[in-house]
Amino acid sequence: MKVNIDGSEVSKTMRVNPERPIPEEATRVHGISDADVADCPTFKQIARSLANEIEGCDLAGFNSNRFDIPLLVEEFLRAGVDIDLTKRKMIDVQTIFHKKEQRTLSAAYKFYCGLDLDNAHSAEADTRATYEVLKAQLDRYPDLENDMGVLAEYSSHNRNVDFAGRFIYDDNHVEIFNFGKYKGRPVAEVLRTDTGYYGWIMQGDFALDTKNVLTRIKLRDFNK
Image 1 (spheres, rainbow, N blue to C red):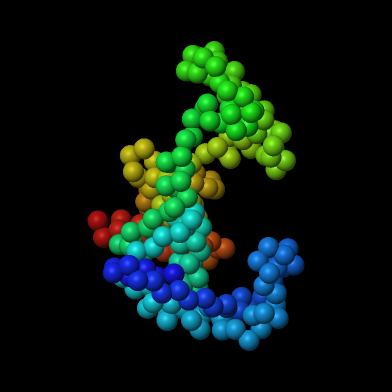
Image 2 (cartoon, rainbow, N blue to C red):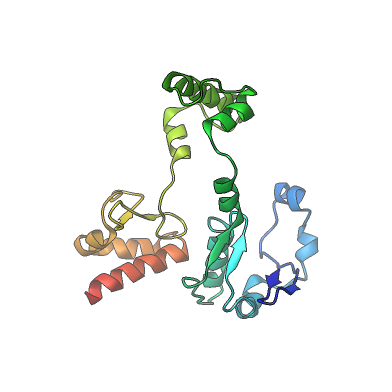
């Protein structure tokens, strides 16, 4: 849905052929089968017109900053359409929801444990309530493994440089590797000391956006 400056709206819906079989479990969710998209265009066939359609537009969605927009960028790159979204404003309705609605310990205790938190903000009461909430979360979500490493990873939030999170910013806003043998090392530093690592990533099974970001860092350092 495209909302113009004057408030008028334009809504368009189309299906694309993913060029691969649609898993049955996916069809059960969205109701779209292989037969439904057999005669539909591929994304590559509509990519340029879609890019033109959103040219100059800011983008909004629900969890769009972490899912929809990274996915869209990756598909544009796969289709050979170089689209620059760096100057677009990106509004994530889910983030607004999470920031505006109450996310206090008292609210969590009420939601997960069904109890009111008496003596809130006293250290002992808050600590006990936090532990009770954690146990209730483990009971409520079967896929949440009762393992310290798994829970720690699930709890983490990184400041991603690329959409896939292969590179993140450290506390000094320096790009560092977030995977592999150089995890935690500055990207520019590694590219200088291990000249073959750039080629390994560029030839590897990494997202196109990840490769583009790595190339920008390499060129920036080279130009310096």
